[in-house]
Length: 315
Picture 1: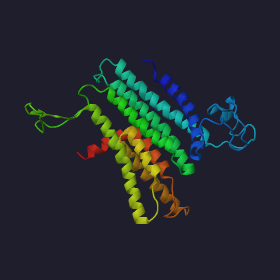
Picture 2 (picture 1 turned 90 degrees about the vertical axis):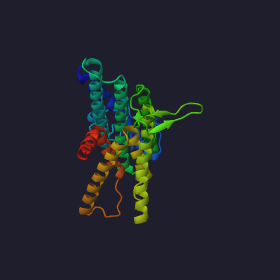
Picture 3 (picture 1 turned 180 degrees about the vertical axis):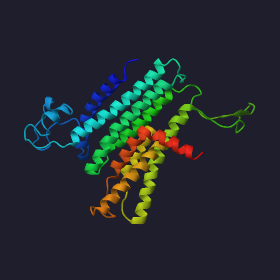
Picture 4 (picture 1 turned 120 degrees about the horizontal axis):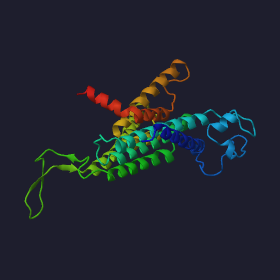
């Protein structure tokens, strides 16, 4: 098996490219602009950016963070987004190496035949989620907007990938089985037979993820309705509901709840800090979507371990 370093290096370079594209999305989507036309240009002087001035990180360093034509500063956001995306892709590439090494090169493994494709698709889901959340985090912080082109598209991608995972399940893998003699299956002209399968693996997997999306989105809508009923003004936006539904589509319901918990906790701490410094009051708005996105990144990395640890406490 090859070393993990080439995987990480390839993921890092690919992440830089996607991070550069993500910067275009962050700049244009909140303003309902196209990410294709016009070509990359300076937002101040409108001069077109040559290809050699558009190399992720490197061009920003060579130009010392300034536009070649007008000399105006290029915000730190550009290299930071590129680096964050690159590191995210590198981490997921390292995990892909671990999956392939375990399944194809470890003679002692006893994983089912669906393990490799299932884990690879899950790895792809987390990679895509990180790309979307980094973009949404910055967009909400800068503009207070969470574009549907990210949230709704992310929901559809998540549901598509869970359907792809379902294809690779074995004949009896992942099925939900009821206790014996719990249901009776009867057909006309046939004897009554005892059934014990409630849902097949694909039905349970895809159906559970659809309900996760609906449940996560509904949670925010209920909180939004209660806040408006009690405070007589808007609280959380519909974009927050769609983002949490997107996290549920790509990770599942309980990781989405982990995202919501840590996002709400971080937003509360930030709000208290602003009030204590006299920079906000109880009615001030804060970019909750940015904190929810950060919670989603945390859940994607360690959410399963947090859920397992919490479930152990309840036993």
